Image: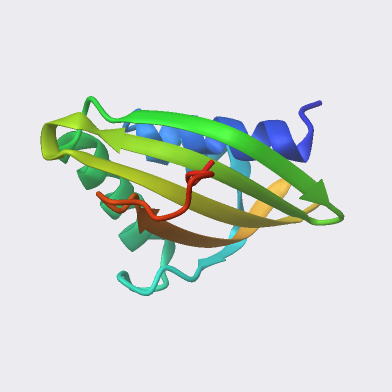
Length: 123
């Protein structure tokens, strides 16, 4: 049986590869909801958005930097690089689980500033 951290990681990797339907079929519960402010809250809309993102930027590099687990929550702090657009971002996904299924998702992203003032960087 996979851990919640492994489920969250697998879900994200499948979604980035354009396999969001597979990710949802494997890892998401029936009562799923998400909180991405740019898309309607239903499952089909977010699946379609993930598919479109993978299609529009097929060569993005997605790297989980750290992943944390606390009770029914898992948080992944990741780096996404889209070289063709010159975009490098820090992204946080927070998953809420019921048993071994993802039932809620929050995601937040911040583009790396061109002139980062912080000498420690974003990671």
